[in-house]
Amino acid sequence: MNTLPDFYLYQGEGNAAVLYTLRACRRMATVDQGGRAVMLVAIEPAIALGTLPPGVSTTVVGLSQHGAKALEQLKPGDIGSAEMWEVYEFGGGKLGVGLSPTIARVNVYKTKPALDSKGAVIKPPDAAKMVMNSILRALEQGGTGKT
Image (cartoon, rainbow, N blue to C red; front, side, top):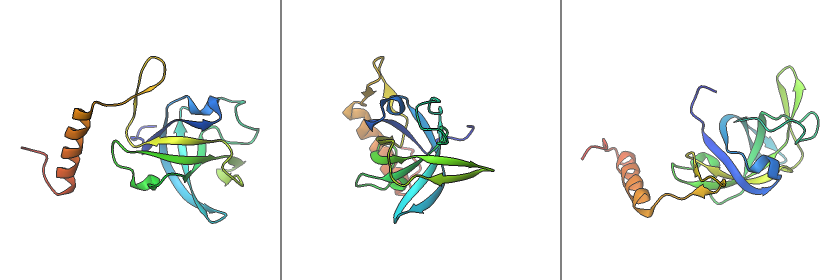
């Protein structure tokens, strides 16, 4: 994938083989599934073959909002939560979303989280978060970022 990811998936609750790999996500489309909005995303790296049932895509998953903040509204530094849906490959580029979110509940990071040697997310120091938030506020208010 040559474009920057829209967000990243890492950890959560459910299928451990899926959850403990940091995956870059790029939005493809949003579909309605039983009254719920499910965002189809291309993931990289792909889920290992044999982890999901036959016919389920290992490169595309569905995500529906689980936390308070919509995935589309996450800002740099935000962490959200989503339910992960199976996406079936029907051939000819056609995809179908499963009946319910059965893979996992995942953490969604707007910016790529730093991981330590044991795979735990390293939280940025409070001072770094304050500086980043002040820069983002200035940019949102039409500032140039120069002081």
